[in-house]
Image (tube, rainbow, N blue to C red; front, top):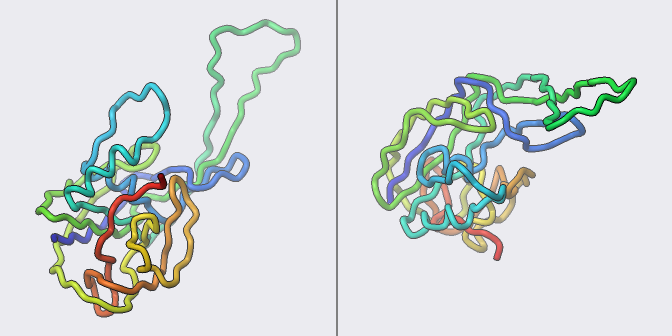
Length: 217
């Protein structure tokens, strides 16, 4: 197995709706592993979809046969900015009604600011050449990816997870304690304490062996 540490640095503001509070759309501090897998070019989705329904299982599960997996990314140093967004009404005709006003509607988006940095890991049975630049989020924000290949050391025992984890993808019984990160399309866990086989990143810190994309049946 090959293990790559990736440092991501935003060159533009990054927006995705982790939480919606009225007309405030908030971007969270963590990057989901589904989004990162697509962004790194390890899987591809069609440009046009007749039905707006995600196909994560169909598109991500083939990576399990390649023994390739991307972890969620944790924030290293992040800041936020607020942007005002205007809703535009799309109509094919307008009825002239006396006294009717064209009142615009506004919302606010809390975005991750440029120069925010994150860290994730990529595991693969075959060597990979990961891109230096990727696009993330609703605005396709330009992001720098700096990759370092790490020496693979497999250990067994109790350890702290080196990154956030998607609990659906973790082998049964590996998670012992954790904090829940509520975000779509599947919640993550952070500050996890785990047990079992793991790839060591630092002393007592690692990534579970056997991570694979898994979806409810």
